[in-house]
Length: 150
Image (tube, rainbow, N blue to C red):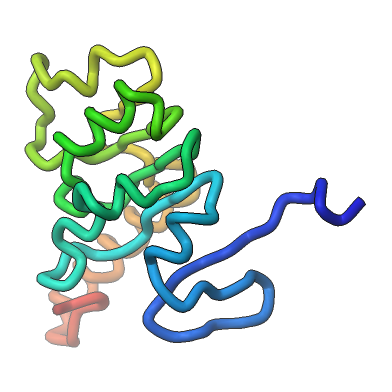
């Protein structure tokens, strides 16, 4: 019966808690996962992390969700994988070029759900964003360091 329950696996630079099974490499994760969801910043290390080879190594019929950064994915390779059925579906909130061009072929596929970089927008995140803005205005007025300052 436990095999019918969904499993959570993840890949990260280091191991976290025991709530999910850690995969030692991204390729291992891609070969096993039914659904891949990206949650990484765009850096020189993550740019193009899902290139043609990585996408080709994904489990046949898997699904891809990207709410992080568009440049993480080779969109041409993703398009080919979706057209061939290697990847069954994609949920994309971000694209390599934003705003996404109306003629982007990914937008024409029935297996793609696309949103305009708004996946983060919930009542809770909007409230948090407003609170953070108000607090930073107060800190600026008082000459204090700003929150989340890079």
